[in-house]
Length: 115
Image 1: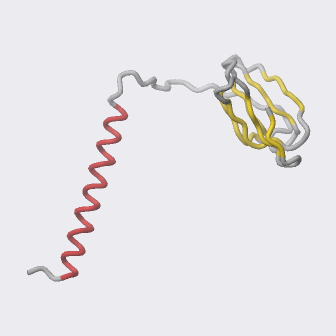
Image 2: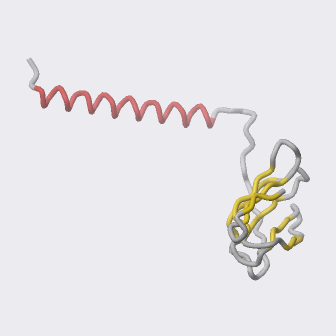
């Protein structure tokens, strides 16, 4: 008969083995998806002075939109690196594209959610 300590150790080893097997299975499943795009290059774009980039989102227009804690602006960057800035009332934080086709963002200084 096994002691309580040995039973507990056996359970820990079995649980650990199961978790490792599950993790390996998930990684293999993710890597075997033939429809998944593989990122093989990166593009670097400098943001304008005054931005401490906080959040970004893919916009419905195909551009990347971003907010910064400084500057009271929202930025839009195209795939070719052209940046357009839009002034707002105060302190943009998060930004997201919604199913209605609009971008929504938060302003921490005005305590507002805007479209």
